[in-house]
Amino acid sequence: MIAVLRLGHRVERDKRLTSHVGLVARAFGADIMYYSGDRDATVEQTVLEVSRSWGGSFKAEYVGSWRTIVKRWEGLKIHLTMYGIPLKQAVEEIRAHHKKGENLLVIVGGEKVDAEVFRLADYNLSITSQPHSEAAALAVFLDWLFEGEELDRAFSDARLQVEPMARGKKLVRH
Image 1 (spheres, one colour):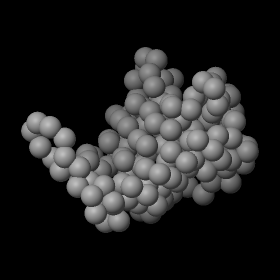
Image 2 (cartoon, one colour; image 1 turned 30 degrees about the horizontal axis):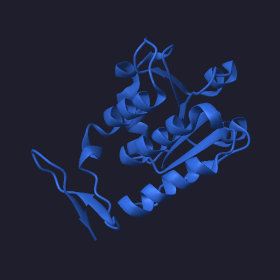
Image 3 (cartoon, one colour; image 1 turned 90 degrees about the horizontal axis):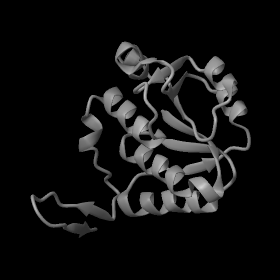
Protein backbone atom coordinates (compact mmCIF):
# COMPACT_ATOMS: atom_id res chain seq x y z
CA MET A 1 0.00 0.00 0.00
CA ILE A 2 1.15 3.50 -0.81
CA ALA A 3 -0.51 6.34 1.06
CA VAL A 4 0.18 10.04 0.62
CA LEU A 5 -0.11 12.45 3.53
CA ARG A 6 -0.59 16.09 2.55
CA LEU A 7 0.31 18.32 5.49
CA GLY A 8 -1.33 21.57 6.49
CA HIS A 9 -4.12 22.08 3.97
CA ARG A 10 -5.58 25.60 4.08
CA VAL A 11 -9.05 25.90 2.54
CA GLU A 12 -8.70 29.36 1.02
CA ARG A 13 -5.16 28.97 -0.22
CA ASP A 14 -4.63 25.29 -1.08
CA LYS A 15 -7.88 23.79 -2.42
CA ARG A 16 -6.60 23.34 -5.98
CA LEU A 17 -3.11 22.27 -4.97
CA THR A 18 -4.31 19.68 -2.45
CA SER A 19 -6.77 18.32 -5.02
CA HIS A 20 -3.89 18.14 -7.51
CA VAL A 21 -1.75 16.24 -5.01
CA GLY A 22 -4.61 13.73 -4.75
CA LEU A 23 -5.01 13.46 -8.51
CA VAL A 24 -1.26 12.96 -8.99
CA ALA A 25 -1.20 10.35 -6.21
CA ARG A 26 -4.07 8.43 -7.86
CA ALA A 27 -2.75 8.63 -11.42
CA PHE A 28 0.80 7.69 -10.45
CA GLY A 29 -0.04 4.63 -8.36
CA ALA A 30 -0.83 5.55 -4.75
CA ASP A 31 -3.82 3.98 -2.99
CA ILE A 32 -5.11 6.80 -0.76
CA MET A 33 -4.39 10.39 0.21
CA TYR A 34 -4.74 11.61 3.77
CA TYR A 35 -4.64 15.31 4.47
CA SER A 36 -4.34 17.42 7.61
CA GLY A 37 -4.95 21.06 8.37
CA ASP A 38 -8.39 22.39 7.45
CA ARG A 39 -11.09 19.88 6.54
CA ASP A 40 -12.28 20.52 3.00
CA ALA A 41 -15.18 18.57 1.52
CA THR A 42 -14.36 20.02 -1.91
CA VAL A 43 -11.03 18.19 -1.98
CA GLU A 44 -12.67 14.93 -0.94
CA GLN A 45 -15.47 15.35 -3.49
CA THR A 46 -13.09 16.21 -6.35
CA VAL A 47 -10.99 13.12 -5.76
CA LEU A 48 -14.08 10.92 -5.36
CA GLU A 49 -15.62 12.18 -8.61
CA VAL A 50 -12.40 11.56 -10.54
CA SER A 51 -12.18 8.02 -9.17
CA ARG A 52 -15.81 7.36 -10.12
CA SER A 53 -15.32 8.59 -13.67
CA TRP A 54 -11.78 7.46 -14.38
CA GLY A 55 -11.72 4.29 -12.28
CA GLY A 56 -10.18 2.91 -9.16
CA SER A 57 -11.01 3.17 -5.48
CA PHE A 58 -8.66 6.04 -4.60
CA LYS A 59 -10.03 8.53 -2.09
CA ALA A 60 -8.99 11.53 -0.02
CA GLU A 61 -9.50 11.25 3.71
CA TYR A 62 -9.14 13.98 6.34
CA VAL A 63 -7.03 13.26 9.42
CA GLY A 64 -7.26 15.62 12.37
CA SER A 65 -3.69 15.03 13.47
CA TRP A 66 -0.86 14.25 11.09
CA ARG A 67 1.22 13.14 14.07
CA THR A 68 -1.18 10.30 14.85
CA ILE A 69 -1.01 8.79 11.38
CA VAL A 70 2.77 9.22 11.11
CA LYS A 71 3.46 7.73 14.56
CA ARG A 72 1.08 4.79 14.01
CA TRP A 73 2.16 4.04 10.43
CA GLU A 74 3.39 0.49 9.92
CA GLY A 75 5.94 0.73 7.15
CA LEU A 76 8.32 3.29 5.71
CA LYS A 77 7.70 7.01 6.13
CA ILE A 78 9.15 9.05 3.27
CA HIS A 79 9.11 12.83 3.53
CA LEU A 80 9.59 14.64 0.21
CA THR A 81 11.51 17.85 0.79
CA MET A 82 14.21 19.98 -0.79
CA TYR A 83 16.46 19.44 2.25
CA GLY A 84 16.86 15.66 2.33
CA ILE A 85 19.15 13.13 0.72
CA PRO A 86 18.93 13.01 -3.08
CA LEU A 87 16.26 10.74 -4.61
CA LYS A 88 18.90 8.97 -6.70
CA GLN A 89 20.72 7.82 -3.54
CA ALA A 90 17.73 6.17 -1.86
CA VAL A 91 15.16 5.15 -4.47
CA GLU A 92 16.48 1.61 -5.02
CA GLU A 93 16.44 0.90 -1.29
CA ILE A 94 12.89 2.27 -0.97
CA ARG A 95 11.79 0.31 -4.05
CA ALA A 96 13.18 -2.90 -2.51
CA HIS A 97 11.13 -2.31 0.66
CA HIS A 98 8.00 -1.73 -1.43
CA LYS A 99 8.58 -4.85 -3.54
CA LYS A 100 8.79 -6.87 -0.31
CA GLY A 101 5.27 -5.66 0.50
CA GLU A 102 6.16 -2.93 2.97
CA ASN A 103 3.67 -0.06 3.20
CA LEU A 104 4.87 3.40 2.21
CA LEU A 105 3.62 6.69 3.62
CA VAL A 106 4.76 9.53 1.37
CA ILE A 107 4.58 12.84 3.20
CA VAL A 108 4.35 16.12 1.32
CA GLY A 109 4.29 19.54 2.91
CA GLY A 110 2.06 22.50 2.68
CA GLU A 111 2.69 25.42 4.93
CA LYS A 112 5.96 25.37 6.87
CA VAL A 113 6.69 21.75 7.76
CA ASP A 114 7.08 21.03 11.47
CA ALA A 115 10.62 19.92 12.41
CA GLU A 116 9.08 16.81 13.99
CA VAL A 117 8.22 15.51 10.49
CA PHE A 118 11.94 15.44 9.67
CA ARG A 119 12.63 13.45 12.86
CA LEU A 120 9.77 10.96 12.39
CA ALA A 121 10.47 10.19 8.74
CA ASP A 122 12.58 7.18 7.81
CA TYR A 123 13.71 9.10 4.74
CA ASN A 124 13.86 12.83 4.15
CA LEU A 125 14.18 12.71 0.40
CA SER A 126 15.02 15.62 -1.85
CA ILE A 127 13.60 15.53 -5.33
CA THR A 128 15.67 18.61 -6.05
CA SER A 129 17.34 21.07 -3.73
CA GLN A 130 15.39 23.92 -5.25
CA PRO A 131 11.96 25.22 -4.24
CA HIS A 132 9.27 23.21 -6.01
CA SER A 133 5.66 22.04 -5.85
CA GLU A 134 4.60 19.13 -3.68
CA ALA A 135 2.49 17.80 -6.57
CA ALA A 136 5.55 17.81 -8.83
CA ALA A 137 7.74 16.19 -6.18
CA LEU A 138 5.16 13.47 -5.65
CA ALA A 139 4.90 12.76 -9.40
CA VAL A 140 8.68 12.51 -9.76
CA PHE A 141 9.02 10.27 -6.69
CA LEU A 142 6.26 7.85 -7.77
CA ASP A 143 7.60 7.75 -11.32
CA TRP A 144 11.06 6.80 -10.08
CA LEU A 145 9.60 4.31 -7.59
CA PHE A 146 7.61 2.51 -10.31
CA GLU A 147 10.29 3.04 -12.99
CA GLY A 148 7.73 4.50 -15.39
CA GLU A 149 5.40 1.47 -15.28
CA GLU A 150 2.62 3.57 -13.70
CA LEU A 151 2.33 5.48 -16.98
CA ASP A 152 0.65 2.42 -18.54
CA ARG A 153 -1.77 1.92 -15.65
CA ALA A 154 -5.37 1.24 -16.63
CA PHE A 155 -8.43 1.11 -14.41
CA SER A 156 -10.82 -1.70 -15.35
CA ASP A 157 -13.84 0.10 -13.86
CA ALA A 158 -13.24 3.40 -15.67
CA ARG A 159 -16.29 5.12 -17.17
CA LEU A 160 -14.00 7.46 -19.13
CA GLN A 161 -10.81 6.64 -20.96
CA VAL A 162 -8.57 8.68 -23.24
CA GLU A 163 -7.94 7.24 -26.68
CA PRO A 164 -4.36 8.23 -27.50
CA MET A 165 -3.94 10.17 -30.71
CA ALA A 166 -1.28 12.43 -32.23
CA ARG A 167 -3.70 15.36 -32.61
CA GLY A 168 -7.03 16.16 -31.10
CA LYS A 169 -8.84 14.75 -28.08
CA LYS A 170 -10.98 11.67 -27.89
CA LEU A 171 -12.71 10.29 -24.81
CA VAL A 172 -14.27 6.85 -24.79
CA ARG A 173 -17.26 6.44 -22.49
CA HIS A 174 -17.96 3.01 -20.99
